Length: 334
Ligand code: NDP
Image (spheres, rainbow, N blue to C red):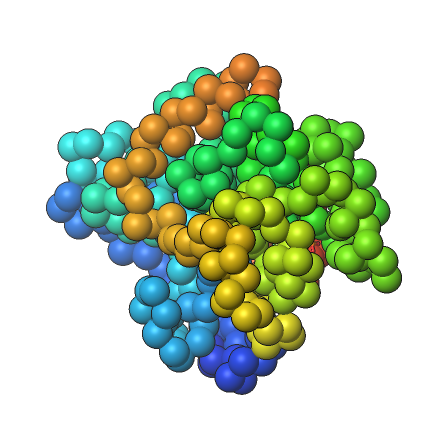
């Protein structure tokens, strides 16, 4: 039987403070055989996602917090290497929530077989997985862009944001990104097809944003919060829609995310809706079909940052929270 190597949450970060490498610990232990109805999966890629930071805290959010001493939660893709479940055969490629470890034993209930030819397996953790569905839901079901409207998305080159911009363009809208640094902004425009992208590190960020949305903002896909959100709020048009997806600038207390006088929402007749993608599992098959179709038609692109080996996961995760990733952050495990 194989030896499983993984990362547990060793301790919680300080309240409203930064997580550090000391909050994680590595483990290694021999795995038993899968029991009746179970499969043994060898993970090929692990997804690192901002929501994991919230799970490290004690405070309960929309999901329970991560238990200390347990492998960190995480999406994985891999191959079935032993099966006592009639629905899975050795050699099947699967996506599931295997966690930060090289193998998992699973009852198969939440495992999905991957059998779409022409799709790299790790895409099911990114643009064709949870982040892609997040983009699809927030853009199509909350913002519902119309041709010619201006749609702004923050963390524009990341796993979610890069899909939002491309879907907005496909809907005939004007896509404007906000991203950290000249290289990310150039990529958003030149590779992903955004109409403009504003660098949030610029000293002229407010003025640059204003210039990038000369007719104001009709749809705001908010991933970051903090000063990016505040600047966008000032440019919202009447009847604009905000899909409040994330507030990563506030996850470690660096910035606060707040609304100014709520009369703004009233006076401009703004629709503001927070959402959690896992509340909409019924729509995942439709979203994944559409996203995979776009990719196979050459109309959906992405970029990846891949850390090598499970030991590299904690640092890659902490770096991602600071913008160290360029595109979907993954860890290669096999
Ligand atoms: P990304 O791939 O976009 O990685 C995170 C990015 O956030 C960084 O690369 C960085 O981009 C940006 N960032 C971090 N700190 C700041 C800051 N202080 N100011 C501005 N930008 C910052 O992650 P995902 O695409 O996976 O997630 C994007 C957002 O979507 C997150 O807020 C996440 O929590 C949320 N989310 C919500 C879901 C839901 O169901 N509501 C589901 C999935 C994700 P840059 O270098 O460009 O600044």
